[in-house]
Every structure is written in structure tokens, then in C-alpha cells.
Length: 640
Image (cartoon, rainbow, N blue to C red; front, side, top):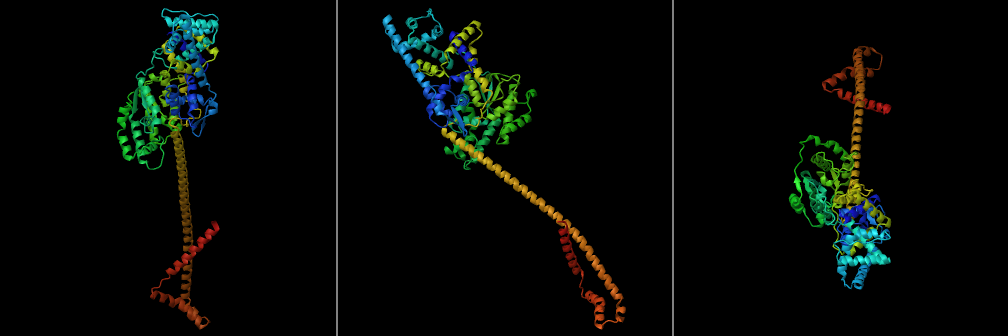
């Protein structure tokens, strides 16, 4: 490595030891873009566009989102409120980014002007501003280390090499003259040197970074929600970060795939949306709102479903994989155990969504064939999802204490975006060098003692000669990746930052509606349960009463029967005795009329009833019913 690369390694090494990673370099850019947005609701999409507008710096939306959540929120620049992030504009005013940048540009312009004057006075050579700026940039690139070391020494010299040209000689003479006089111009120069060094740390430079971290035969599979977003079926704002990731992965030579069962799931989701276009319901992806706002009818959705596979394979260039075999049983995991874990940790709206996630994870494990990798580009296979709780559950399930840094089978789309970006970061904007230097200096501006540590670390690295170009990438990647792979949420996993401000507010409203419907469904389910329980209790109580009444009547009927039989028997005996005693009655000394009545009742009346075919059984039944009623009331009064 050349000395510029060694210095880049030294700066990143010292920053890491001071708990600063690569993201910290971009925090001031994001703060400035956020401060000038002026919106009460933070949209990562709009912050990204503002960064691009202000600095021509192209950061992926998910990288901006990471900086917002992990850096600005922890420092109090934004706060979580009602599922959205609100900027604290008062606190954001503590940034002196703009002032520092403008001062640096003025210092650069003054330095150029003084070099031109110095060349005219000493060498009688007239220089153009653009020519001088290019010469100064080239001079600093060649001698930046010597210049920085000289700033920490009482006596220092700038050596001339065989490649020194006339402009190098003029600027070298100017620098030595400024250093001798201890003029302000010398201080300006050192600040510009520092800005140049920081620019090389922040921006990807093809001349310095010749090692590209490409994927090595690794297949990247996408879940259903990600592809719905990527196809633009939830709006452009949700589509943008997905397309960014797909392009980054393709540029890094990743093999892009989707399982057939995820295609089937997308079709099922779109069919549901088609059937609910006029139902005034909100789905989890915002697809119904997208269809309605674009005037889509059922036939339009049907055409989208029909063209789905072609769109994925032709437009997104993602190949559909039918299935992954179970041939090698040593790499087959317990899908039932995994299903139980996901069921307990992830709130699935549908049973088949859980089953398909289990299928996906199981297939990824079989594709890996027990391959354990610390880098996503060499892990053989990984599944990308937009579901954070699913990602966390899988990370925890497959966590290995002996190898805590291995890439899990599932990564959140934001995480892999950041991991890929860290190894292939943004290229420097096509701005004048003085502006880039000024912005980088304003963004980072390390303390003076750190610059001394940079030089000391550089000397150690240079002496050991153990680093290579790949180490530059790893120094940028590893400290930040440590935090990313932990999947920390700080309790803001439900906060929405992807989308336009209006889309974020609409999604919050949709979430509230879904939550309200869920509560209504739970309430209705509970009411129905109580009704069924009450109905069942009533039926059981009625059955118990009926059983009790039946038993009571049976007892009453039995007693009434015996009573009626007893009365009937008693009457029969009386009649029989009466007939037998008729002659005796005739001889009794009683009134003649009474004798006649008794004889008629005992002898003639039964004969007449028999001739007329008149039965006494109905009368006996009435007597029996009378006693049943009496006995029922008597038992109720006694026992109930």
C-alpha cells in the first residue's frame, strides 16, 4: 500500500479505538439535510434526496435510515412519537457544518490567491486560478503526510522527488516560506491537508480502493413483502430502497433468487387485495391504497397477477427456484421446532405466512450445507426479509456462542443494504475538490490530539508492514457491522421512516385502523364466546331442570298410582261388603228411604252403568292426575 492508503488505515484504526465507526463520518451530512428539510415528520426518502441535493452524495435510503435511528436518535436529535420520528430543530441548530464549510472554502480561495501572488513575485510566473487549484491538489496528494508531520515539528522540510514539476517547486517554496513566517496561510494549508485526508477516508476512491468485496457464488433470496415493494405495488417511495438493494447486490455479483412458495404467497396477497378493493380495508403493504389511488380495478389487478412471474424474472432479473431438495439429511432441520419458535415470537396474520417462512429458512440451511461465514458475500445463501421480528427470532434461534459473528440464515433488508454499502461505499461527488475537502473537514474535524495519534499509528503500521489493501475495506466494515448484526431496535421497530411524509402519515393511520379492526374482532370474538357460553349454560340448565322435573314427576306419578289403586281397592271392598249386607240392611230398623238409596247404590247403579257401557276409568284417571299434581307440589315445597 502507498502512504495515502496507510494513513486511511491509521485514521480508521484510531477512530475505532475511540468508538467512532464509518457511519459517524456521515452524521453531519444527515443532520444538515434533516435541519433544512423543515418537515415535522421524518422521511428517510426525503432526507436522502436532500443529502443528494445539498452534497451530491448518494446514500442508500436504508443507510440514511440507519444513521437516523442509530446515531441521531441516540443523541437526542430526533424523538419517537406516535410511530414516527420528529426532529428536534432546536437541538439540530448546534451544528456548525455550514459555517465551517464556508470558512474552509474561503481559506482555500485565499491560499490559491496567495500562491498566485507568490509565483508572480518570486518566479515572475503568472498562474491561472484553475491551474493553481489542480496543482495544489496534486501537491497535497503527493506530500500530505510530510506536510502533516511538519505541522507537529519545530523544523521540517519538504523533499523534492524525481517526479516534481515546476508547479510542485513553486508550491513547495511557498509552503516553506509560509512555515518560516508562521503565517495564517500555513495554517490554512494544514487544514486543507487534513480535509484531503478525511476525504480519502469518507469517499470511495477507485485509485486507492482496488479491492472490491464481491459475492462469491452466494444466492440471495427475497421474501414476498420485499418483492411486492420492489415491484412498486406499494408506491414509489417503498420501491426505491428495494431497487437500491437489488442493484447493489447485482453490482456485487450476488445471485438473486426467490422461492416458488413466495411467488404463491404474493399471488394470494394480490388476490385478497383484488377481492377487497371496495371493502374500505387497509392491508399490511399499502397495496390496496396504491391500487385505489391509481384507479385500478379487479381486471387490472388480475393482469398484474398474470404478469407477475415475468415481471420478477425480466424486470427485476430474479430467478424463481421451484424447490430445494431434502437429499442430504444431515443438513435438514426440525421444521416443527422452528415453527414453534416463530409462532411464539412473531405475530403472523395468517397460518400460511408462518409455514412459508419455515420453508424458506429450512431451504436456506440446506443450501448452506453447514457453511459458517463471517461475511455475507461468502455465506452461500441468505434470505432477505422486511420483517424485523422474524429476523430477530431467527438470529436468536441460530445464535452460536462459540461463533457469535456468523451470518444468520435471515437478514433484514436494511441490514444487508448497510453491509453491502460498507464494503462498496459511495463514490465522491463530482464537485470541485475544494468543496469536497471543506465538507469532509466540516463533517469530521477530529481534535488535534487525534491527528498526532493518526501519525503515530501510521508509523506503527508502516513498520510492521502487515496490512494490505483489503484491510482498508475491513477497517471500514467491521466496526459498523458489529452493531448492525445485533439487530438492535432501541424500541423503535414500529416507527415508520420509509416513504414520503404523506405516505408515512397514511401508514400510521392504516396501522391504527388495522389495530382498531383487530380490537373489534377480538371484542366480537369475546362477545360471541360469552354468548355461546351463556347459550350452552342455558341449555345445560334447562336440561338439568328438565331432568329434575322428569324425575320429580316420575316420583309423583308412582305415588299417585299407588294412592289411586288404594282408593279403588277400598271402594271395591266397600261395594262388595255392601252387596253382601243387602239382606241385613233390609232388616235394619232405619227409614225406608235410606234403605232404598243404599240398595240402589250397591246393586242397581253398577248394573245400570254396565248396561250403558259407562266406565269409571276416566274418573280414576282424573283422580290419579289430581294426586300427581298434589304430590308434585308437596315435593317441590319440601325439597326445592
